[in-house]
Amino acid sequence: MIKVLALKAVKPIYGDFGKKHSSQSRKVKMELSITRPDDWHLHLRDGDLLEAVVHHSARNFGRAIVMPNLKPPITTTAAAVAYQASILKTLPANSYFTPLMTLYLTDNTSPEEIKLAGKSGVVFAIKLYPAGATTNSQDGVTDVFGKCLPVLEQMAEQNMPLLVHGEVTDTAVDIFDREKVFIDTILRPLVQKLPQLKVVMEHITTLDAVEFVQSCQEGSVAATVTPQHLLLNRNSLFQGGLQPHNYCLPVLKREIHRQAIVAAVTSGSKKFFLGTDSAPHERGRKECSCGCAGIYSSPVALSLYAKVFEEAGALDKLEAFTSFNGPDFYGLPRNTSKIIMKKSKWRVPDSYAFASGEIIPIFAGQVLDWLPSNGD
Ligand SMILES: NC(=O)N[C@@H](CC(=O)O)C(=O)O
Ligand SMILES: [Zn+2]
Ligand SMILES: [Zn+2]
Image (cartoon, rainbow, N blue to C red; front, side, top):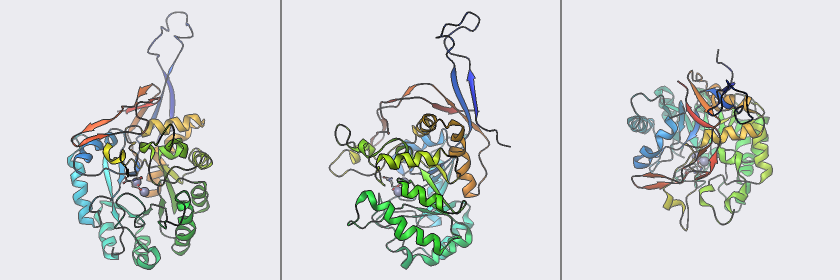
């Protein structure tokens, strides 16, 4: 049996329990011991950037679903196997971390490729990017129902999950409405047509997405949730000037949407789980006249999720979100090791330097509570 989340008071760093307590010395430090989390939506990139970021995920997460939107994209099982090997090469020998690979769906993906993927033991899901919706999505799908039905039927047969970047690309649709329009025109009809297909709506940003996922059957449709969509609303893009490091897709929405997502994840529903969508871009590619979409969060994400659950008075629900709901949905075992979340203040670095430049994390330079560390 997995131990439920333990909230324990440990000896204070300052103070002397042998003497009469002053209010200062009675201060206790809080620690949470939780089952090692997994990240069900992660961009690890390749080359220098991979080497710069992978250890931030490997430190605390057991597994990660690794996105296939490289240049060129990972469209075959053979490419996924090679990409997994290159990720594993960057990890120290004693690392716990297991990258679970995905394939990038195109108009030309064949049902045979899905069969190979299913047998590989390396590929755990297939990713649908509507062509042009986000970073490196130009080779994505142009017409889900016209081009992909045989492949999607094959996936349903194999119990292979479909991961969805849920936005339409029609430029006539307001960018803040693209998720809702995608649900209405593609996702709901797809789920009705293929109810046996497992679908994860990735990085949900709206009340509409929350309601859609809640309306579907548990175990067939679920959603990943990023730290930024739990903590920030669209004001954060413009606070005191343009804030490129808060820009990702789907773009941040109004406060009512943020609140709906917080309520959903802290409710204890099994349909929502952790997916950081940590998406590093070199600083110059974000701070320029046409900046890339993507927020780098892997070194900060667990602190941010803990902050959300603490502020909602729902720390007892944190562990299911970070460590149970994801593997349960994917039909994988839960991790058996633990991490410790210490309630102690730490400052997020201003940037992380690497061979080809630097990466700016979300909440750069800010002080956070809840510092994760390896529990064993
Ligand atoms: N989320 C983002 O804004 N960007 C991601 C792609 C994606 O997940 O849509 C990236 O690869 O940079
Ligand atoms: Zn996406
Ligand atoms: Zn992503």
